[in-house]
Image 1: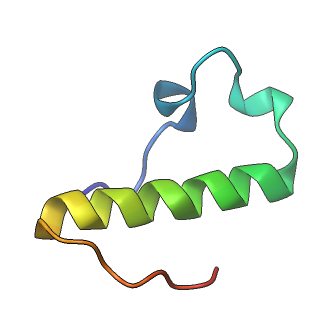
Image 2: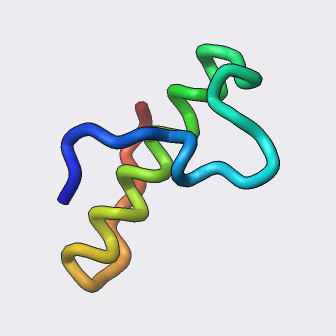
Length: 49
C-alpha cells in the first residue's frame, strides 16, 4: 500500500491546486480508505478523519 501519493494522479478534471485544504484532506482520507479496502479485499469500517 502507498504511504505517499500524488493526489493529481487520482483526480479527474481538476488538480490538487484547485482544491481547498479541507477538500484535499477529505479526498486523501477517502482514497486511503479505498486503498485499504482493496488491499485487504473487504469493506472496512469507516474511521472519521
